[in-house]
Image 1 (spheres, one colour):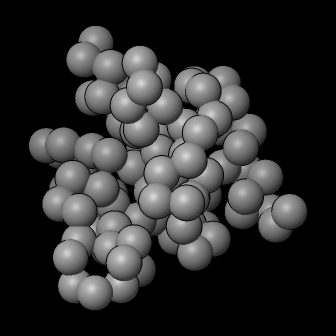
Image 2 (cartoon, helix red, strand yellow):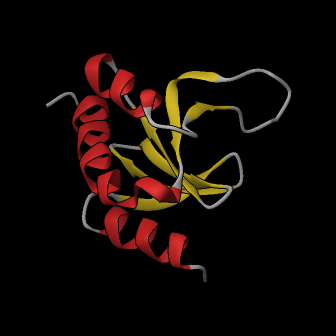
Length: 100
């Protein structure tokens, strides 16, 4: 397991239930995914200011799991360079998906 995936798991385990989304590891709350792991980056379902902040980071992009130009508009893929911010984004994603 890579350092990136280990960090993803340690963050996710404290927040939700491990599952799969598009064949990728993810964490869910109430059967809804709020984070996943793709290309050694953590991907977050975000809205409003948190979405803008995550997308503004150098190397961040909208999540396109198919690679065919069909990005998922609420999901932002944040590179490992910003690992210090992963937990905060995960908490914001959980809050958004859980509705709390």
